[in-house]
Structure formats: structure tokens, C-alpha cells
Image (cartoon, rainbow, N blue to C red):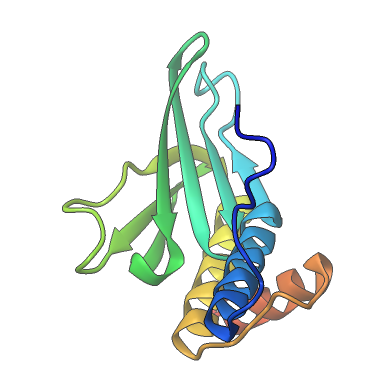
Length: 156
């Protein structure tokens, strides 16, 4: 049994820097910014989209207690696309080179307002990532407000 073996030592500056980076990354993935789900009964088994600061997680459910999860890094997303119909909307993520070989599955039967807000938030996070803007010290509500405004189109 390994009880007294330290996982890391805080002696070198490089190790301290790496420890700070990993702690920062953990705080970004623990902070769920927005979540949206498909509308029941149009989709019997609910699908979810979870938006965090550094990744999007698509959870597809096809039967009881079974699911497929698709984590996608913000830096791999080229554009979030919303296709709005009469009652519902579909959210698709178009990925660039370096990520998946193909785009993740789209999520249909979303409320139109939720899908549009998710698109704005994802687009704002993409732009913040491209500009190397660090959002870790900000409260969740402030991050949502800022990235929603950054990702807004003139038509929204």
C-alpha cells in the first residue's frame, strides 16, 4: 500500500507552473456554464449538451441507462450552427482540423431560445479562446453575460 509517497514536490519552478496550470484547468472543467436538453416527449430519451469553459459535452441517450458521451474541446470547434424550425431547433457543431475526423452528432428537438443561447455562448467561448482570454477568476454569471454578448450576432 502506497500511503506516504508524495505525488509531486513543490521545489522547482517548472513543477510549480505545471501544478498551477493543472489546477486552473480543473477549475475550468468544474464550472458548468450552461446545460440544455431535448424536449420530452418528442425525444423519448433525453439528450443533453453541457457547456463548460474549455469543452462541450454532448450526451446522447438511446435507451434506459445507456448513453454515449462526446467531449469536444472549445479550440476544436469552428462554428456552432443552429437550424430553427417551426417549433424546435437543432444544434450542430462543425469541427476543424485536429479534432474528430467527423463532426459529432447533432442534437434535435431543443427549445429554440435555448439553442440560440447555447450558440452565442459557444461562439463567445471560441472567440475568447482564440484571443487567449483567461476566464478562470470570473464568477459564472459574469462569464455567461460576457460570452453571450461576445457571441451575439446582429440578428439576435
